[in-house]
Image (cartoon, rainbow, N blue to C red; front, top):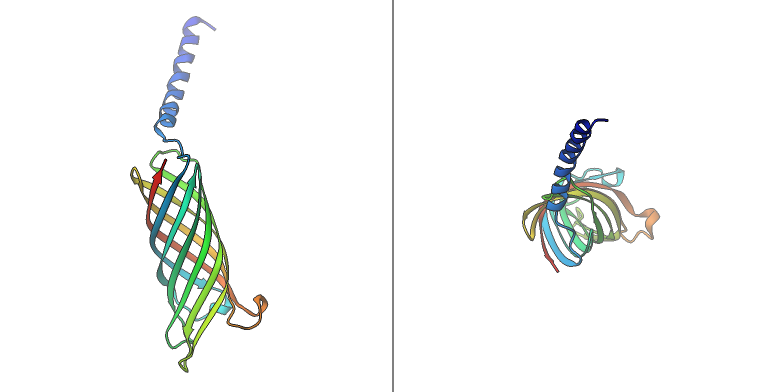
Length: 196
């Protein structure tokens, strides 16, 4: 290979590598430790024969957690009020959960995708047609994915989709006889962070 050809190859290689290096330098390293709080609106539907007759509904969720590099280890609460055919009022579904999130690699410094798992306590209440309020507790487990869009240095828009499995025990004796089904939801909100 001639010196001129070698120089051309080196020039092409350098020009291909330089944008990637500049982009890597432009992306901020994950914070070593910090704190995050977030909240937003959600919209979801309940699935399964035990949830037949329910309607899709809007709700809200709120989370708080500790940031450890690419991880957010948090707790949260969500609540949605559904309509249901066999009730005299609203069918309120709420959950208290723990949620570990893992930030994934991204090609841009402004957008950060993430994956999440939720495990927690499920709750439901509704008023029967004879005026009695039924209350249930159970379990929830779910997976989700979303993305954070950096609006400012400590403020991000947070959009995600989530699928959960829910169980509601109205005192029937255990999980086997509990009301069970799935919930698919989408949410959009804001996350605030403080890092060290």
